[in-house]
Image: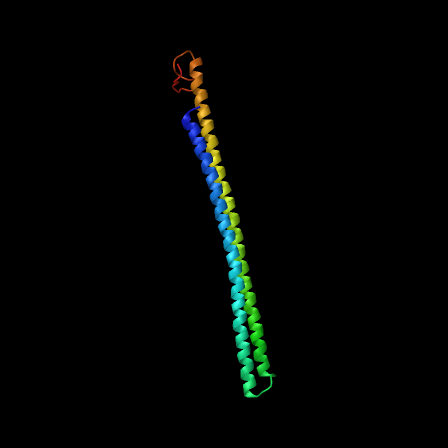
Length: 160
């Protein structure tokens, strides 16, 4: 077997390992981004609720200042603010969960594509060895064929 075949095999196997490592790195990055999305979603919801509490406080002060009781339209306006805040919070959580799912899928795809690339490199490595073995076997047959320097397959043998 030739040195170039061994080097080709080793190079392809190293590329397979590098492809796996790169895929795992990309998957970990996506998983870390998922954590950041979770944190950002919680912060958005927290900010929304703070703003809503300020608005509700302002509404209560305005109603109290006017001298009317908290009933009827004033109460309905306050209820609308609460319900609107909850709907907005639900939408923020929903958008965050969609982003999280996207990051989970991104990590899975990074691992799957890295595995496929790794297998391609391994296949190429094995093909290199098999090709070199085939060449060595066909080259070796020429010495049994009457010493003409030709193999049975029409290839020139370098073994004399």
